[in-house]
Amino acid sequence: MNAKEPLMLLPGLLCDAALWHHQMAYLTELAEITVADFTNDDSIGGMAETVLAKAPERFALAGLSMGGYVALEIMRRAPERVTRLALLDTSARGEIETQTQRRRELMRMSMDGKFSEVTPLLLPFLIHPDRQGERELTSAITKMADHVGPDGFLRQQTAIMGRPDSRDDLGRIKCPTLILCGRQDALTPVEVHEEMAAGIPDARLVIIEESGHMTAMERPQAVTALLRDWLLYSR
Image (cartoon, rainbow, N blue to C red; front, side, top):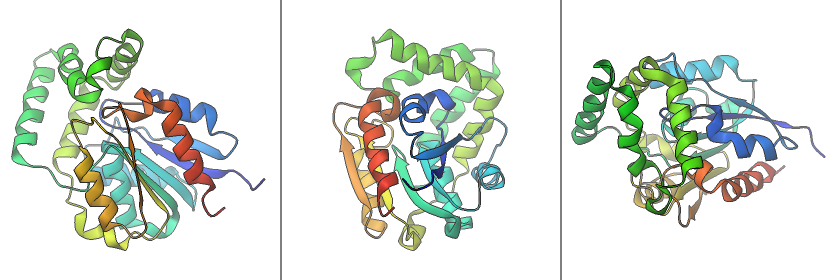
């Protein structure tokens, strides 16, 4: 078998390595996996530079949600270093005013000492409606958010609000690209993934049924199988 490929996994807002638990467990025979820490940067560019500073010269790159924004920034800054790209439950679009207003409300709650109320408010947007009562899943998401903490949350929201619109850059992505989303993703719906797939040459679009925004945790077996296929492509 070929040598393991370095793989950088980029988590989303209020997420840490636990987001990728299943993928880390079942892709280790194919990849040397590193999960980025996005708790200390307050810009997408800063997050991208954090990844590039720690990554090997050439690596595969997968990002979910905010991690996808960072992945697209990396493709602008160092496309020659990325062997393959996976964009999960994310968007190439920039921020719009209604999104910013909602973010600022949650940031104010956090600054007012109500950070513990943020995750329960977000959960209906993060996972499939039928899974809202699944204690193991919701507890895992809450635990990740608590690990990121209120200061990390404020920095991440600041970064997301300032992200650039990446749609004009999609056509310059030349590496094998997988675009994946949950059918019921309420935050980044199917149409924004179709838009990315149309913009990136030869991109593969896969929609996972019965899943919301957190596909890597909601449908981990499906995501791992798709990432496995993506890692093996053109090896």
